[in-house]
Image (cartoon, rainbow over all chains, first blue to last red; front, side, top):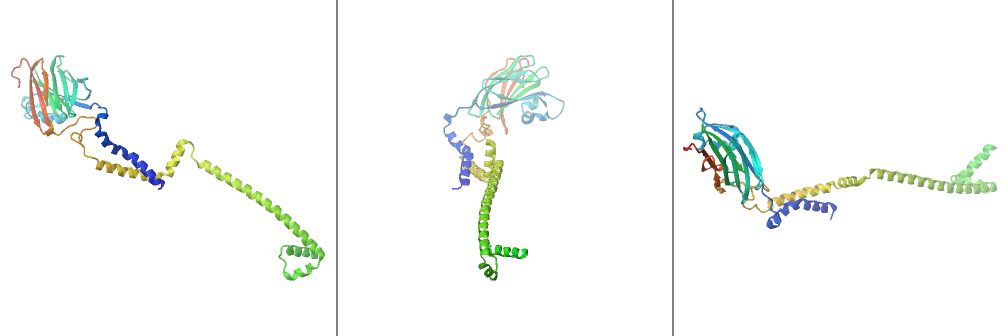
Length: 166
Length: 180
């Protein structure tokens, strides 16, 4: 056999090995160390007011949340929605992450991941005076939303914090 | 007289070299002086030939040695220096082999990827190490497992749209009872 043949065989085997080696690795998952799943959560802070405009006025920066705000229970209550702050945080298990808000403050804690597709997450929100208004724990599918909505006196304006994880 | 002697000597030299025509050889055959000169010329020719051959041999050998040294120097100058140089030289010489190997590897890897078993449930859409965003139809509504609203009343609403489920935690201040 020529050198070309053997060299080609060696190089092709070496390069193809990782692609072929993937299947046996799945067959024995118990031997692989269970790496913690990465969880990234988006936090969108929104102000909601009752304006004079007839139709809803929604900040285009709100992106995927925009459609949800056009529906009840938000739309009849308020018709003007503005983005106040937006943050994306990578959460580590049982580590509380502070979320900076324009009005008040919030924290998020990843309690655990469930079935590789859900997160159990605890969110707390304090108002501008530093008093806690919400402390909740949710089991949330990746891609779904929890929208914390606080009605603010005296004008019944809204302060919203939408949370989604993936 | 001198001219005749020179002519004779030339004829003798031609005779010694075997170049004298046959009709002129006969008069020289019976001349003892010419025979002596012929013999002396022959000895001189042999002596010169031996010396020249030796000189030629020495000269050729020196030239050859010089030539070989020149070739060696040229090869040394072209030879790669250091490990990287040797590796580069080897790669240059086997470039065709490596390209053949890489193309073969690409083909094998492509076949392996095409023919590998399909991903199992929940494996297809997940980024490696990230949680899996499942299709909306497979998701369940968010479950509010604990809720505390110290400054008011909390109400939970769930609804579903084409983007998935949404849980709304509606907090109404304690002094505005009517809420939503």
